[in-house]
Length: 527
Ligand SMILES: Cc1ncc(COP(=O)(O)O)c(C=O)c1O
Image (cartoon, rainbow, N blue to C red):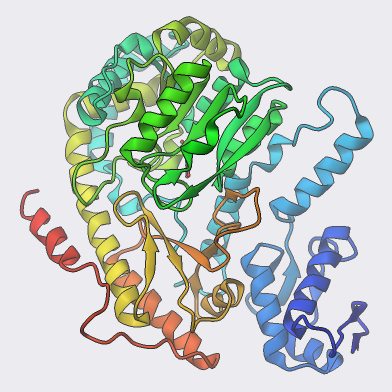
């Protein structure tokens, strides 16, 4: 079978399905540039008739490419190759260019292709102008805009307006405004049990700048860095961009398998112990101790990325690594991206005392400091107790969303395997056996206006062959409970019309999170 418009040959005798073959061919043509960004594709009906395959085959291949960002649809005018092309394509082009120019930076990936940002932008674009304006998107990364404390923010802005001129007419302290560093030190000491002096706090442009500052100090071409496998791509690519070599250590239900650290020769380890990214596992206490001992005996530093630990639903969190040690080997990475919103671009580092000066210097070299006004509003927000109240409020909202999602999955699809529901704003859901593959499920979701994400699409970096081939990652932070229920119902409908029975749950014996909704409702009474 062959298409006249695009040279596509499909092999009916091959073991790969026609849909998979078509997906491969189109993706390959985009990657090699045979299909240029902006090129219009034939309609699914036309292409199906040219290739002599069912229209469903073409539609599902298109949906998958749309979901991964290779294709876009414009209402009323068809399907196009995305412009710009997604991260993976840019990666290949950037790598080719680096190879041609050679030199010291030849093998460093271009920072232009920050994966999570691209993906966030792609998913945002899909939300804004996607095929369905009421698309229900289970993207994990966004805070709910409705939770932003706009009224309080405006009030703080008014209160501080008379101080702006004086404070922005010159440079501030590169390590951050003293008011904010003090407020964060108090917050972290009280909430994460990390005894913190304000001098140890460095204000950064999100966790991402923290990772860059750490890399500036510790990562050089000979550096070996332990990462969880899978891990956050935003971190892995920064380490690689400084020439570091990644040493992947697998994770299981108790976090990183720390017994594999012995003799690895790494000088740095990057971990997400509170809510492993992306699997959602919590590192247990024994492994925390083992990791700290390893760092102590080898002289390595640990980066503790505590990106979503503000949200813990079932009991108190395990103490942060940085609080277990006398903080001599842990660099603690905090962010306001989840609690307030990623657009605030404010995060912080808490560093061991011996690293205060080197880190201040690194921050000065990078950008001389963070914008004053953002810092001062945040300092007042935290210092006046508003942040604590805000957290209590949104923890309740996210708790309710989480209960709706977890219970809804069990009710709609039967017995289920979910990891990471105790904390954060996303869960890992291993698809039940009666479901199609993850890619097909994503495509079916897309066809009914539901955004679902695989491990690769969520911005995870995986080094060993995937141990999560049937996992989807569902974020619930930016969705109202009603939207979550509607999204699950749509997915069930989509599955049914694609010929898969969603298998509704029995009322008894389902591993439902008993009482989760009730708990969330009870909490509400305390707000
Ligand atoms: C594992 C992890 N770390 C950190 C962040 C936050 O990064 P930033 O503070 O730069 O927005 C994210 C964001 O989604 C994340 O998933």
